[in-house]
Length: 259
Length: 110
Image (tube, rainbow over all chains, first blue to last red; front, side, top):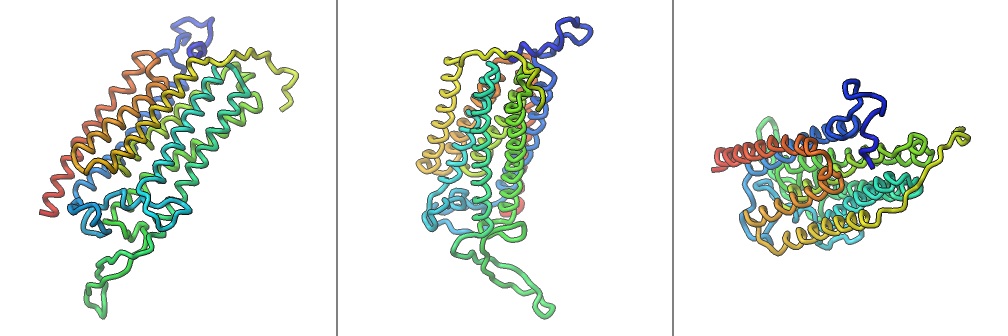
C-alpha cells in the first residue's frame, strides 16, 4: 500500500526526518497542495464568469424564441448544439456530454492503473496507462473540433450593430458576424466568447500536460524504472493530477454548459 | 536499458477484486449523475431550482472523485481537513462576486 512508502528510511528516528507528516510522502503532499492552489485558479476563472454573466441581462423570452444577440447573455445549450458528422441537426449539449463521459472513463482507467501499481503488476499498469492516454487524446481531439466549430460559426449570420468612421463621422452600421474570436462574437456579448476560450483553453492545457505526464509514467513503467525503484508511487501522484483535471471538467460542465 | 542483469525480483500480487468492483461502481454513479443532469437540463425550466439541483449534483460528483478516486477519504484526517478547509475561501469569493455581479447589473441596465 501507499503508506508503506510514506516513511523515508527505517533506521532514521523521528527527529531526523524518519516520519512522514500527515501519513503521506513529500511528493504526494506537494501534489495535494499544488492541486489546492490550482483549484483556487480555476475557481477564480469560473466565479469571474459568474460575476460577468450576472452583470449582463439574461434572455427573458421563451427558450424556443431565443436568437443570438449582443443584448443579453446567450443560453449555453443554444450555442453548443453541434455534433461531428451531424451537420444541421440540433443536438444541444450532446457532444459536451460525450466529452464528459470520455474524461470520467479515463479517470477510471487511471485509478485502475494506480491499483495495479500497488500490486507491482507492471503489465496491468501499462495496459491501464495506455487506455488513460487514449482517453486524454480523444478528449483533446473533441475539444479541437468544438473550438473549430465555435470559431467558424453557424450557417446563419448574426446581425451585429457597430460604429465606424465614415468620412470622419461616427456612423452606425449593421454587419453580418459568423462565429467568434477575441474580437467578434456572433453568440452574444464579447465576454462570453472570451471566457469560453480562456476557461476551456486553460482546462484543455491541463489535459494536454496531463497526457504528457501520463506518457512519461507509461514510458517509465515499460522500461521497468518503477520495478527497480520498488514502488509505483509516481503513478499515484500523476493519478492525483489526472483526477483533478476530471474534477475541474465536472465544474466547467455544470457552470459553463448546463447552468 | 542495459540493466537487465540487475532486474529485481518482483512479487506481483493478485488483483483486489472487491476494490476494483468498488471503483467501477463509483464510475457508474458518476456516469448516472451526468445522465440525470443531462435530462434535468431539458426537463426542468430555467430558474433557481434548476441551478440548485445542478450545484448539488456537481458537489456529489466532486465528492466521489476526490474521496474515492483521489483517495482523500482514506488519508490521515489532518490531510483531509487541510485540503477541505481552505475551500471556504472559494465559497466566500463566490458569494461576494455574485452579489457584486447583480449590483453591477442594476447599475448598468436598469
